Image 1: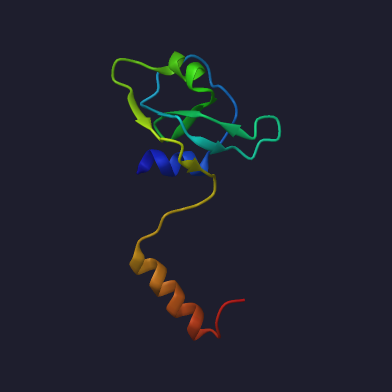
Image 2 (image 1 turned 135 degrees about the vertical axis):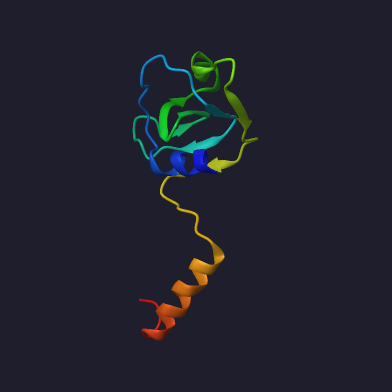
Amino acid sequence: MRAITAILLFMSGITAGAQTAETIFINGNIYTVNEKQPHAQAIAVKGDRIIFVGANADAEQFRGDKTRIVDLAGKTVTPGFKLIRPRQFFSRIKLAKSRGGFR
């Protein structure tokens, strides 16, 4: 879950040198919000940073012996969404209603 959050928050089309990724997400429909590279297939993550976004074949250079590979099976990844717990969600709905609704 931590890696997915990092992906959504730090989407980038820049390769950050020859590093070994902790996790590589492949076979995805990744929307990058980068005009020069609007879509990608793979993301390589190390810690809380994205170190690569691009083609599946190019992501292999970041694969190490302990790298976890996650097959997204065509699922879409978009930047900017943050997952919250249901309790937080409903407490925010209740707060908004108490203030006169949503604007």
